[in-house]
Length: 81
Picture (cartoon, one colour):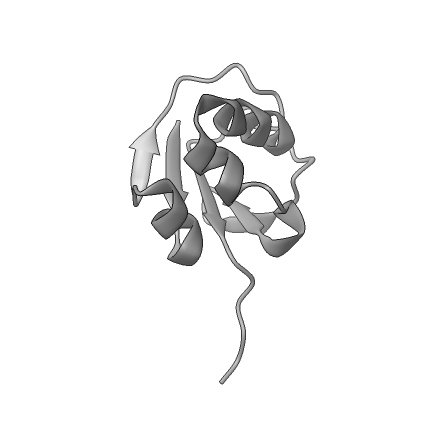
């Protein structure tokens, strides 16, 4: 599965994207798997209320299933300007 990181999430993790093998059933399961990897992931996902997620480029929820999903993107909320 392709995982894409944007803005400060990318800065904390140090990667713009990566391919991961996962057994996660939901986005939240994936977050738990990633957070357990290293401190930089744990920091990036420490407050998921400050994050949004898109599955195959469609805004989604953290309890969404991952079955059939090819890409997961994590990013902070968008703000207007």
